[in-house]
Image (cartoon, rainbow, N blue to C red):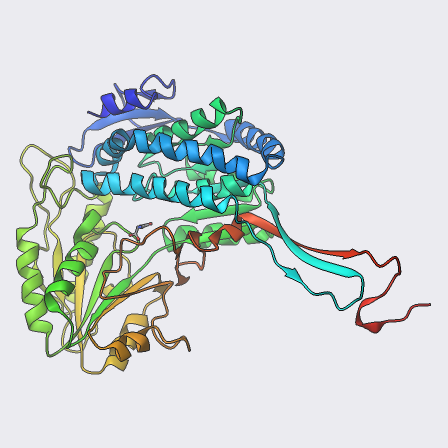
Length: 509
Ligand code: UN1
């Protein structure tokens, strides 16, 4: 299946890849393991300081050519790339499933995000609007324009190995930028396939090196990449720890960052909510992708009057989700990505128990016949009556849902905001006033970048700006006016009066 998909996408014969991996990882070689079987799938030859240097040079040279191409013409290249992803959606989805263990429908959903953002970027290519503003001087004009920025460094995580690159790459491309991509070492095959698809379309249309891939370790490649002044923007997705490092190094050279880091997302369920709808939404948001989305619901904050009713619905639903091979139809929960993720899952559960939490369902590894990979049981843990459960302050990338109860909506909002991260949030209520309170224009409601009403915390559409506040990093990717992060702004003033006049009425004669 994997070989077939890699062949369809033209990378089975890539000299960097061997589908018959032998030995173990070295500084120059990474072994990709299947999260489902634990077995090695492929080895991938890694980049080093010299090949990174050449890659940045190529990307920079390509930028100088690409920025001269009119934006709507750049859009035509992105349109063709989107069509290529449409054609190969299934094959690319199969690689995502094999490499990171997402169920097929979610893997294909992720490729769909790529197709959608390509469509969005095509439209955007004719809408990179600047403003005009009235000048205070007669015979003068003022306007603002948006200019290409440079080669953009993109660092992506394993959990959205295709779509997060595309959010950056498709938008950056219409903005006139080139993209240098360092993917997670847990998902290099998806990166090779995605970059190859985009690159071959662009090449066919006469545009070389718009999309460049560097696969490497943090010390050899990552650190050098973020320190390099030729990359004016580093857009990084991953842990808060990684983002703080990127932020620090890039700030030292006064570069720009776009950071999309951890989340610790809560769903508030009020006493008047439709509990059936809430349970279904929370099930997908907490258990989907085996809890490995940055938007996963990790905390349930439920009104004490409906807590038992909702929790028993959830416990029942958790008991019936099918855990198994993510490539099989009917599976809803695939494996965690690796053994370390299983350890983190177990550590969080042990800590929660020690802190007085009660495991209501799950709480252990899961066994799947014929698959020796990293399976765990989706888990619900009820916080003690005091609501004190310090482990719930951490983002554990696993399907663990902590349950807290509340009496007043104000307390619920304060609890939802009471973590370091600020990515996604949700409220379930049939009370329009409470929903509006949650979204208050004063900013006193949810403090997150994403706020949902009667929907789960995950599954954003590409049309909105995606990202969050506080330790989530503050960056915005994808739709709305996120494109402005990939361009530089210039304020232009033009004197057509034939006379020199200074602003602010200054006379200098
Ligand atoms: C991520 O987990 O890094 O909103 C991205 C969502 C997806 C993207 C998640 N559209 O869940």
